[in-house]
Image (tube, rainbow over the protein chains, first blue to last red):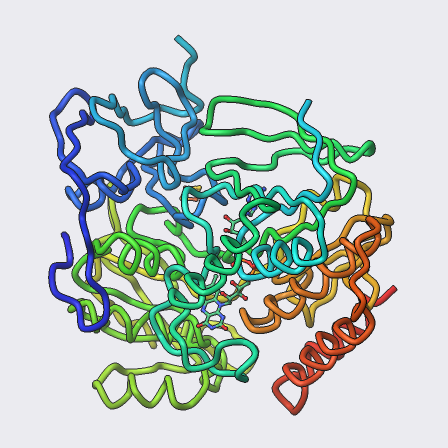
Length: 101
Length: 360
Ligand SMILES: Cc1cc2nc3c(=O)[nH]c(=O)nc-3n(C[C@H](O)[C@H](O)[C@H](O)COP(=O)(O)OP(=O)(O)OC[C@H]3O[C@@H](n4cnc5c(N)ncnc54)[C@H](O)[C@@H]3O)c2cc1C
Ligand code: FES
């Protein structure tokens, strides 16, 4: 899902970053948000809604709407569209409001 | 508790220009930005801007962000930008609470505050509008132009205003298929240059059309669209199905300014400015002395007016703090006349009307 050729832009992708999504190993790049890296890997469902358990993806991608909240390193409700990837991060789909461990 | 002279919330064109202008007068400025990169909406805009020389017309948005950040650097000793920091509360004693890195929570007390928080994209009501794959057009622009990631393979664009049409063109530039652009209005809202570019590439622009429903289990798989009559009611029997994995919603923006409402600034709903806005003086000051607003947060316009308002708000906020440059009045009038120019003509009519209603 990555754009490699573009008439105007060049994308200098940083160092490769390893992280896990629901326990599965994944790769992204330094300077990328969690939501962007997941989307590049084809993952669109980031959470399940609190009441009806409907799938949730991102919506605004700039930290406005809270649609992209996931559990990151055990911490729930992290806006993954504005949080950068870090080596070894544990990213999990969030069920509803999440739980504080 | 951290204490600052001037706090600016938001580092879009309005916030950055306000910072430069206030620092130039001698004020010490802290800029809060919830994202990890300053520049607001500019960083995703790869097309050339319209407007006049003083607002960097015929530069790409992303390059304008670079120019503004260079200016910020020139005042490095007086401007600090704090990234990954969301202002989440704004209290009577001018204390702003901040969530940093989605973890740390602390307070900042400011003598003066400029709210330059921008806008949010509206959504549209239809069955299954919450399926992943249905994104704000701005979100898709961010994914594609900032991160170089394809939002999907086939896109339906809802909204034929400037943003909808520009993002459609940028999708095609990135090699993604746009099956159609639709709009409930009987006419295309975007500037004709942008719309004709798209038409030449064979993308149908369907006016008097809306989304009836989205289809999919885990993610978007298809969209049903239909025609609407002159009262925007769906016309039965006109349904069409598009198999798409992405739908972009581009039905307008609303000012983002709850922080000002929380602080107790006088607010008013002004349709011409696209939503709830703070009442403000000519010099961008709200009903609370020392609290200013600039850019889309005070009414939806464009980056060019956000910059001029930012310069004006920064100049006036600094002056109120005692930093009055020798050419203060001359500069104030210059920014006001830049704004008048940007809002002149038939295109600016709506904004001028809105400004009148929201003027203190
Ligand atoms: C998708 C899209 C496409 C556009 N295309 C064009 C175009 O082609 N040409 C044009 O002239 N204009 C365009 N515009 C309009 C133009 O970009 C805006 O008018 C302009 O960016 C407004 O500037 P601003 O500084 O007011 O807000 P913004 O650029 O939105 O900046 C606001 C900043 O504040 C930050 N922020 C918000 N809330 C908080 C908080 N609580 N704490 C900390 N930080 C916060 C945001 O992260 C953001 O960085 C577009 C707008 C959008 C949304
Ligand atoms: S997608 Fe809106 S906050 Fe992340």
